[in-house]
Length: 290
Image (cartoon, rainbow, N blue to C red; front, side, top):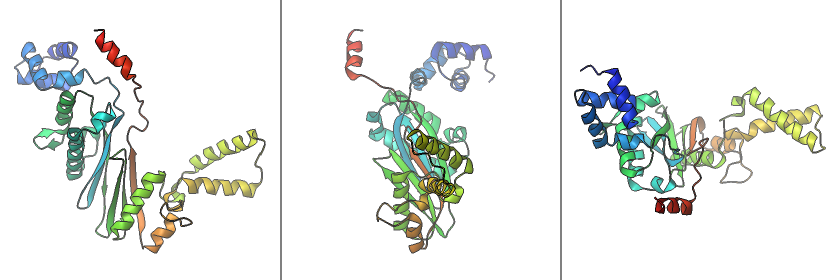
């Protein structure tokens, strides 16, 4: 059934629901505006839409592994209280498994996936309405491996940080330790050869300027070259010190165990998102004044 564009516009203005949700509501109710509003309310969409402007910077990351495919996801909530809710945590795990099973390419593709009879987007909308906080699937990544490779996964603080690595080799303990290393040290690259020259030059300039400002200007070409190597080593996984054994590099640990890191991904929940600062006492007092 064709939906009138002006009705979609009016429904959006009256409910603040998204355009696609309004279109679907009108299709379900034969273009009856009032029934469409009821449909949105009954499906929790209006309530969810009113929260769409809030900042969701807490939440949980999780990892699902299905055979040769792994998916790491980050689902955000507004507060850490909700992130510790069992319903929210079950939703995140369900989303991770669905993404691992289907390996979508984009966020829109992921939101449209069927997840036990509902789309992931519908699951999130319904959870938002039920829990009372904005919930959103922020990002995900799908990794694949060959038969001679192994996944290593690690969750820190219940999913505040998460990492998944792909290792060439077959030792699950080594894979786990490397995933834990990644969460502990947050390397940007696997090997120092992967570090872009632009990053090294930019960081070098910062450090040379800082040295000069502190009265210790560095001008020796060999010392400068050594500093450039040090900068690359600091952000490269295999050049870092292994957290479980002093004076041992990660690369040496891998070599001892006939393993090579092929891929790595890690998430820090809320990284780069603005977090809302709230005063609980002020919030309570404001409610009492209403």
